[in-house]
Image 1 (tube, helix red, strand yellow):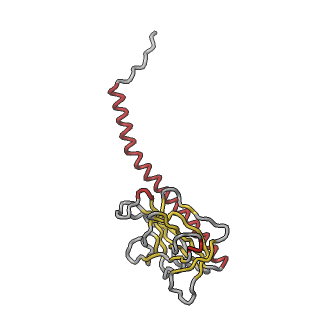
Image 2: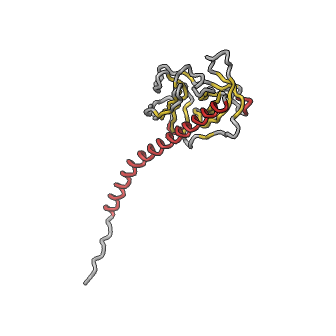
Image 3: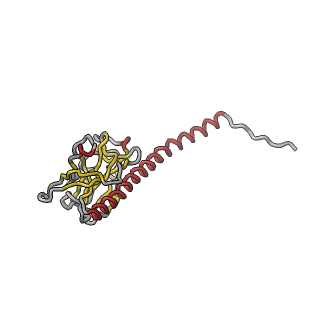
Length: 213
């Protein structure tokens, strides 16, 4: 009995299969890239979330004002570090705090590759109602005297905690920090999705808000 041999593919069939594969790749790759980018921004927000809890714990245990100081790189903030800061107790409404020292044993924390916090008031700032809209938003508290810390910039925005564990310098407003994929960010357009992390001014509980443009 003669065995049947497999018929080879024709050129037309090979071209058709390759066309289908190219079509599937064109659909799948952007979707995969968006999913991967979303995971990166979530990872960045979780990284800050852990630092928020650590800074608050230090403020309460050491009984000092403690800040997460953000360092600008290009058009966004890509790293932060925990510091102890001074505050003028005679001017409790003043939102500028002076750098005292970096918390011993800490180092600069880099956000995951290709993620950042845009350098605008709305993306690293305060809101009265906990939303991420521009209405009612204002700039984050700032830390001065940073040239003594080894940084070239004199001041920088920060998330600051009082010795009692509450947010400082926010005027009883929540802090909102938005994370974005750096290579897709365009300051002149609103096409880049941003993942906001909200910090309650009183309880300092954190939660993710819905992504915004």
